Length: 315
Figure 1 (cartoon, rainbow, N blue to C red):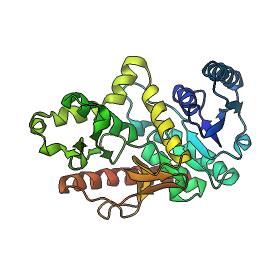
Figure 2 (cartoon, rainbow, N blue to C red):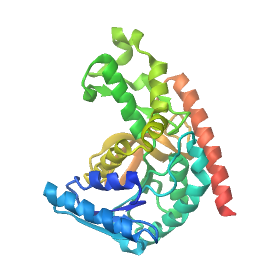
Figure 3 (cartoon, rainbow, N blue to C red):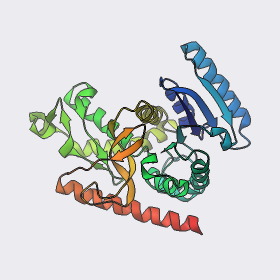
């Protein structure tokens, strides 16, 4: 059994993630962490979740705190802290403000729970994953970000709708930045085990329209309802379950890569990784040349943005 701490639990994503994580059989305690001054809200969320668990028949403890020392013993820390995107904002607009929150929290997690895992959700997630890795002092396998996992699921759903098949029959990935420079891996996409380019209907697939839809999905949801909640929350729970259940699934998350993708690395970026209770392990892949070029550009963009943020933090 495991304890999971959610940092930023008073936000919409943190609240729903707590509810989704509570359904994982291996979790017996959830700690909701928030900043000082939010005690009343944290208490209310805790009570409300407790009622939900009672109605569902889930035997799980849920507590709250504004002191991160209370998170000692947690196996997974989910970081949803920081400012969310507003309509019209780019994820990088949030970088410096959120980095100033992520850095000290990561350092403290490294001190109180050095063998735990950190799952970063805060945007821009690839850069924030690098910040958490550096300041926690933990191994690269212990720190990872939501990255392009949800983007990959969005692409999977769109392809399933076009081909009129069950979503489980579609296998596809988006790698690179969780943002404008994301890279769809059409070369690694299949339906029912058949490479998508071998299907007659592939010629009618509106590839650019689909990718534009995936790329703009978050902004569209924010404009229409204020924030993305359910998609990220369920994606977070999937990753937490994959770790705690020691599933060895290959999912696409933001992880520190060295040379796994055509020698491109030294950056935290969305890549396929094997995930289990020991952490996150990027796997070596070979992709089409056009995808390599796009991934290299995405990596360079993230690397430069990360350099700027880390340099500013040092000052």
